[in-house]
Length: 327
Image (cartoon, rainbow, N blue to C red; front, side):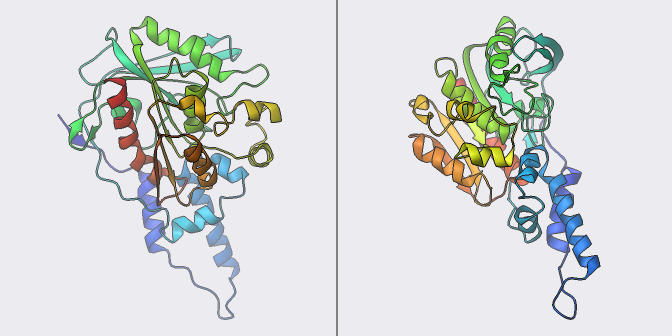
């Protein structure tokens, strides 16, 4: 039975704040102490609404700054149709010791409606944003719901989805912690032993996860068949990345090796979809990638690096992957 998903409290709060909180100045044209404190509160609220994908923006000084103001004046509002889902399929969760990450990690495998463990299906590897873990790879829906989503009135072609804990190192190798090797050498073989991803594997993610999805596809184009990235966290230089998040790359050499703009030619012939908001601080990096990734489907449209844009872009991204993985 198809049904509509209720709105999330955080998103409703964001809409209410954006539309119902007029800002005024004192008699002399300056802000009163109370107004300054109120603005600071609005900025903190914006951080909360941004969700995990916005954590790296705080370190860049973007929040609670321009992004907060954009939310208050409605610049981050993104229209999206109501989400409609079939009854969700099952999921399997567990933990394993990752030799690549030198620690225990959690993982999840979700199945589409009408399928269950033992089904042989194409596989989407979903990489989580900065902050969360394998349980929170998407915005506004769980992996099980994502696979049960209806797009343009039709259910998605059936695929499975898997995720695992990648830490906060932007899915590239660090000394003693290699989340990409964990995905390639441990998570994907685990899924293939379950009958998943033997025919086709795609990658997707939001923010840090979107960058990681592109990086994974560039490094392993013979294994990955399609990629969809939403608001990928792409920096155009190592100094820029280090100023924003010193832990994103272990060194300048590590940045060069994992620069998805420089290595975009590795994606030639692969179905690629990338989406970014016009008010997203990563917009310049995404534009540079879009110019380098010839043939990619690029959607640069109104929106910010925030939940409403992520949620609006999930249905077309999932449909893109499912279509190419099941062709």
